[in-house]
Length: 143
Ligand SMILES: [Zn+2]
Image (cartoon, rainbow, N blue to C red; front, side):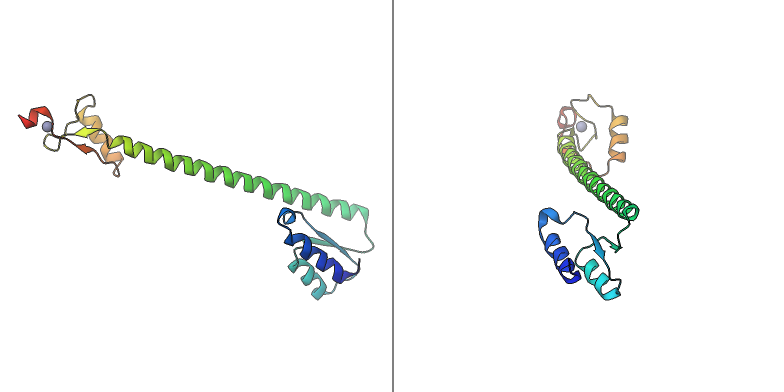
């Protein structure tokens, strides 16, 4: 394959969305910087000079394959992390919504029905500064 066509082939392969992740190793008799720069700009990952040595070719292919696998693993891990963060955000929002359902008397600062001790409530409120309680006067304070 003439070198110019090789660069164009890289460009066309990398323009197809389903093929963008496929590593391209350019095989060339040339080593001019301009050609190599054009090949890398077109999306080539690596190059091998002719005549091709099978040991070198195999090592480069293995290396490109390993890099691709690692990239995919990292991408998959990042997607998983993003998914987990979104789930956590949703859970935190739900918890905050539920916390607002705990009625606290604005006068005596006690929860009612008083299932939660005042000490536990204060401790919890201090460690969760974003938490808001529902303000509701208790029967003791209204009488
Ligand atoms: Zn009260």
